Image 1: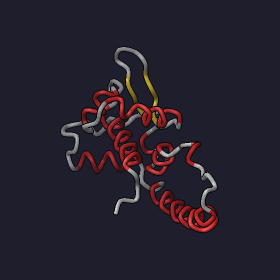
Image 2 (image 1 turned 135 degrees about the vertical axis):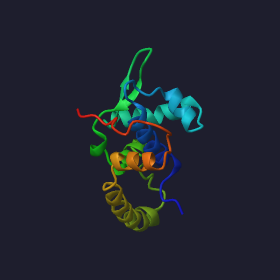
Image 3 (image 1 turned 90 degrees about the vertical axis):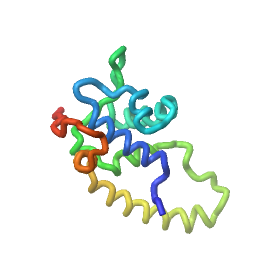
Image 4 (image 1 turned 45 degrees about the vertical axis):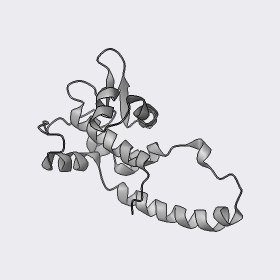
Amino acid sequence: MMLLPRRALLAIAAVVDVAAHARPTPVAAKALAARHNLPPRHLETLLQSLVRANILKGVRGPRGGYELARERRKISAGDIVRAAHADPDADSDGASKLIDEVIAPIVGEAGQSFLAALDRIHVDELCNRAQAGAVFGNIDAKADFNI
């Protein structure tokens, strides 16, 4: 059973992909989408959410794209999931007292525990695992950078 929606999984994958490919030039959304078999426009709103959360940085221009806004060891999977789910319209509509007063608080507590576990997983670790498994082929493992 998968606990994260596909949007959150895509967000984590996008950040790890950018971390692995963004040096020396930013990663174009089109290239990112191609590597994940998605239409290019499908990722744009997700990538913009990650930019607003200061996880990615958008670079404009003909050689533009996305790069990390922080060091990969300072970005957790929890940060990415929170950014992917930052939706002000997701609040309760008050239609169900059972959901609002009983179920949502308990599920929210479990969700906080899950996010705490994700906060212990950093992009650097995910990149190292991807490299060890040759997920991206031959990419320089020393592509991390300090800001």
